Image 1 (cartoon, rainbow, N blue to C red):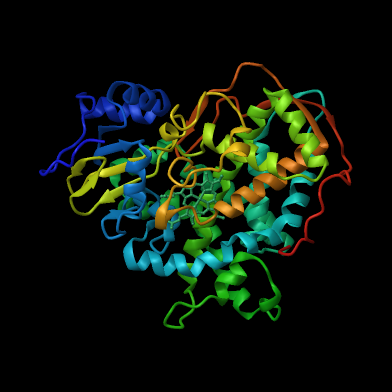
Image 2: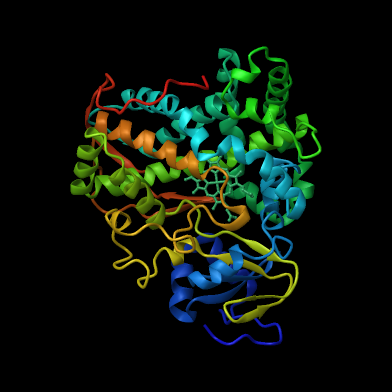
Length: 455
Ligand code: HEM
């Protein structure tokens, strides 16, 4: 890295009109980032409409500087503001500094690694039921199937809904909310009018109102539930959590955090699972090794497959921080107001960190552990994904069930391209596969998990 410059400066980047660089980023982010990295190296500046300068960083040392920056200097909540209309103002994703830490501390214990293991049985059961419904001998897409799995997991493990009518209502209503979040039309409009005005949109309010009613009512009832202390779902834990001053979370706060867990955890995990299948069916040797190890009750290769999928096909290509003061990154003193983007996609493809970076080689994670600043599918620092343990645990439970029950092959041997769906980057053909065999009865070989705790 170069010497620190004394006066604020931006790394080089394309001198295109702002409209053009914004369009390139929005429409073809992956080829755009790859091209910029080839041209400018580890750091480059892109001008984005309504946002100003975005500085992409992909050197592990620079990423470390951003992730370990004082939270008063690097604001992530402000950078995520576009999600305000759906998540609501109390969402942990949108807060910064002391407010953020207060909320994060409250939520951390319920998403802790050891605790999420209690959902293993439930996740396996949901995955088995879904896989048993897949057709044999005809083309289908795994991405929507994985969305069905992750939605069901959230309804049970996160929301803890038991009432059949409510479950049916939410299964119908939540996809409408999620469709709003991932609609290009809505996002474009949001970008134009800004999140505050979009929050008042009649169309959005009409989509959210029935869901909000159910969530707030559920939170209210949960407080009074006689078995509250025995319940394991995340809402029940949040209802019992207390801020440092002893106060419980308000109903609005609970609503906003439930919506946050849904939006942050649903499509991301479904997309990561769809990519795992997309990669595995194109590498039959790796798929067979995974099947053999799962059947033998081994976990190491499954873990490596999960990590390699998240490396090569991260659901999100970057994370963002907005600088509140001038701040040094990678030898540049970046001016206040700049948005810095630790680039998940680019650091995951560095040949100096990952030899043969384009290849799907789960074995690399058997040889070397994932690095804190070189394997960053869940971001990092005090903003690292709160659901990372939950997501990895769920991915492993679903893949275990899948290799034990299904024999899949790709419809087309050519790899699927990455398609941007506003937030997540999913397989372009939805992860199209054909099942040669589906075992409708869940085999005994699926390693036993603790009994479903949250349903
Ligand atoms: C494979 C699946 C997932 C991926 C790839 C993913 C990725 C991410 C990323 C990149 C961030 C931003 C981190 C940063 O700014 O440094 C994030 C934040 C977050 N994620 Fe996830 N996520 C996944 C699943 C989940 C799940 C299942 C949940 C909840 C059950 C969840 C809840 C959250 C929350 C609450 C935050 C905000 C953390 C904060 O601002 O302090 N995520 N996630």
